[in-house]
Length: 104
Image 1: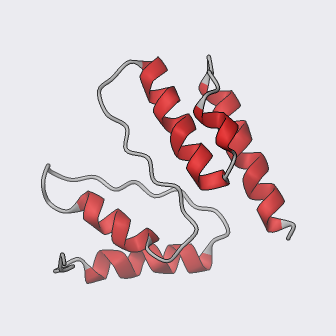
Image 2: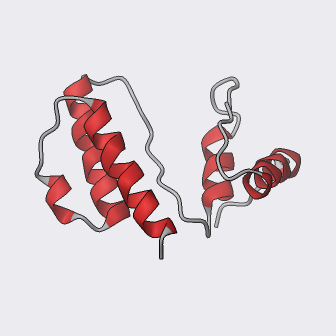
């Protein structure tokens, strides 16, 4: 089991922002291999969250991977086989899903 060490202050800041705001944008940056991904994963643990790591690949491949991640998050399996030509369509699906979840 991985231990979460020396990032309690940053985790507390993320949790404070999450609690205080209905919506927020926070930038997490730093040198390579200092625990940014671990911090994010620890923060979203036990929260409704979608995690997607962008990497150096073609835009089409990124959109396909994001659609697969979105399919798992929303339970809309058809997204795994759908093709998208722009990011806006994918984010629209995400926003509509989130809005419908809030109405429950």
